[in-house]
Image (cartoon, rainbow, N blue to C red; front, side):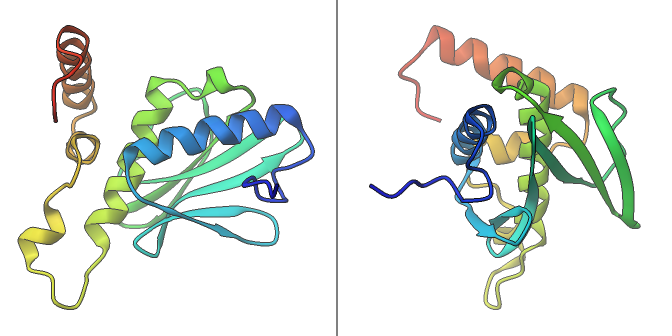
Length: 165
């Protein structure tokens, strides 16, 4: 049986576990493709990278895109790449490092790429319209508002587990 884990991730059970958890999280956010490079992976949404995954001896280093600077002690490196784009590097050394805050950053990165894709025949409203609740929440500029909506969503889903979104 062929492994679905890319070769550059294999070789460390810890790194493979973190990668599997990451793929699970990203899969719940929306459709994406994994593009394997020589030394890293790009997770792409509609052909545009929203997350860089760099294998490290003790886990993974992620490069997230954002339209703002994020102040958090887990951010190892911040690089403004254009007027409206900032890249942030974080380290994931265990599955526990993939916490709610990191998931929110990944959702934000995914939503930014979804908004920048311009299909030839798409109407402008189709470009901005989120296709999932996660995309809707991720596109909200206020971190506080995103956190409040995420908490409210969790409460609703815990009270009404069969609720359709």
